[in-house]
Image 1: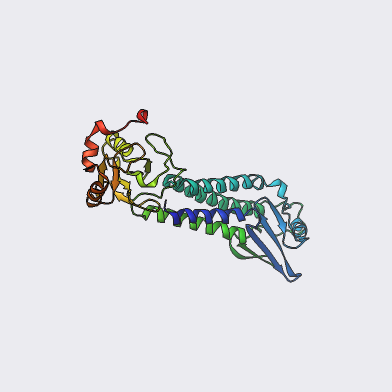
Image 2 (image 1 turned 120 degrees about the vertical axis):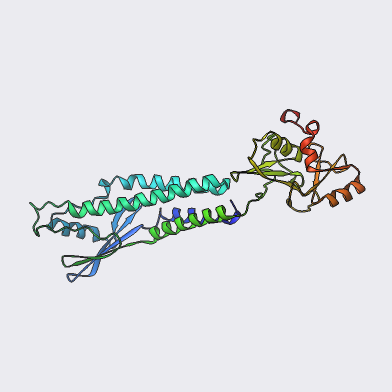
Length: 324
């Protein structure tokens, strides 16, 4: 993942987390006898009136037409949703921390699926709520009349106008989904190449040693887009030599002359010095930004220049994990 994609995921997670405190949906009822209107807010873990007594008034009106009361304790989804949202938030933080494409794709798919299921479940709840009518005990009986609120928009129900829209938390969740999709597009469309290095945190995939000096790091980008880090050129060479045909797409090495951070150079375009004064963590070889830079370094500091193909071919000069 690119750094921009990771920050988009962090922003998406922040918007998702806001749903713990902000309402997801709002339903308003307007009628001549209620000039100030009635309304309710649907939260991640409950349903409440917009004004203090609104939910009680709505339930009283429902009683007249045979509808059941809105009882938040009787809605099981309100008990599950905080846990599901918490899992999405933690999963998103894991995606941003790992920076792996596969986890981003899986998390975005899970987010889209759960939002879709939640949207459908809200529609189903409103449909059942407006169609499950006890006409036998209703004070006001209108044959074949149903009272399902609109999913989005406005609808006339007797002399009431019911309006239903996403509230701030619901809008935030929609924006979070959009940011996650944007992160997927940024990641999928990003040009192939090495990822940034975190010295002291990243470890060599071959020998498992901590990568402390970015000047001598190396990296493989596989055919699936996976970025594999190494603490030295010889570890990467060993990995490349034993990899299955077609699985290695790109190889990169750190320029030993970089003075700040890591400057990635394609392994085939770099120059290498063996036996000079500048020593890599495991001794040799040391990579430079170009064959000319390697030749100049060898002239100053001693050593012999070699090519990337020679390093790959020279199995005797490649260390094994046991040798580390």
